Amino acid sequence: MSADSATSRYTFATPTPLPLEASFDGGRLTSDGGLPWLAEADAALGVCAAFAAHIPEWRRGKVQHSLETLVRQRVFQIACGYEDQDDADTLRTDPLLKLVCGRLPDGGAALASQPTFSRLENAVDRRACYRLAVALVEVYLRERERDGVPTQIVLDLDGTDDPTHGAQQGSAYHGYYGQHMYHPLLVFDGTTGQLITAILRPGTAHASRGVLTLLKRLVPRLRARWPGVTMELRADSGFATPKLYAYCEAARIAYTIGLATNPRLQTLAAPQLAEAQRQQAAGAEPVARVRLLGEARYQAESWERDRRVIVKTELLPKGPNVRFVVTSRDDPPLALYEWYVDRGQPEGWIKDLKNACRADRLSCHAFWANQFRLLLHAAAYWLLDTLRHWLTQAGTARLQLDTLRLTLLKIGGRVYQWATRVRLRLADSHPGQPLWTRLAARPGRP
Image: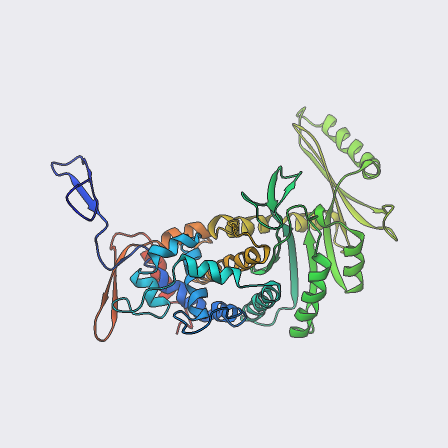
């Protein structure tokens, strides 16, 4: 490192006769050359503008940054992998980020810094969060019918653990996960993978907490938009409550929900287990895998009537694996159980939301500020997932969102501003160039 320069220089040995010298003095460069694609996705979705319309204005006097600009800057940063507010202190002068947020690269005012974002997130209260969640549902409605009005909707419900590391309001120790955390409720469209809503809950919340309240607001909205649509609900055993069954039956929503085992269910499954063991004993291999599906009528003490339960019995080298699913569907047991296990897809969507969009970085003190953050990360998910959808339509294999960001967005480039246009020059060796070509050639691109 040079000691006689205001700009630090770093020297590296190389396998050539020449050493390498590096310094952060390249001028109008961006680390995120793919930002224009994020801006194009946002223009198609309108998610940042929709959010900004429901955020209360907390500032007085002259305003330097519009609410829409603030939301767009924050969501774009999250989508690019900069989830911390502090990142804005340096990114606020990134020439390309300035451009996609409505500022000229050269001469345009810098974007917002960390203190502004802290005040923004703490200005949002419970009512504003509700309006923002409604706005996210409206984005889903518009996008879901883009290729035609749906005739069937599958609601995939799931909860996830969101570790906390401070004194955040609502943080609590969850015995199952063994950590202090929040316990968000997520609802995805089981057919398209689109995120319908994300609701923050305290760390000790039961997996089913708030589900009925949510459905009683969401289902009428879906039916008002699409009067002829049929709906199904799919969830794991954390959502297995009599109130949810009764609601779905009254609302004409088919359901398939996992059931936690208990002694009565084990007794119910005993004949099928014995048959599986008989088949295994008769097999050529001593540890031959046997898998049987059956069904029975079952009524727990808390249920007002009996219901159909699918029983899956599987003998594996490590021992028996017996699972139960309660359902209102009438499919054959094998087809129904395989449809139920397709809910493994939402686990991948949750992984994208948490790993690629950093939705588990809820470090504000106030609970509603963290709910707002969760929705901002949900907006970033929508932008990235929209780009993935466009690429899939163009023939690209489905990518994880962190892979998509790495190959499409994280490209270094130099930004030039001239009198009549702005020019972005990117590395000609970057392997993401084919993705750009496919996005640029997609049908209907403005």
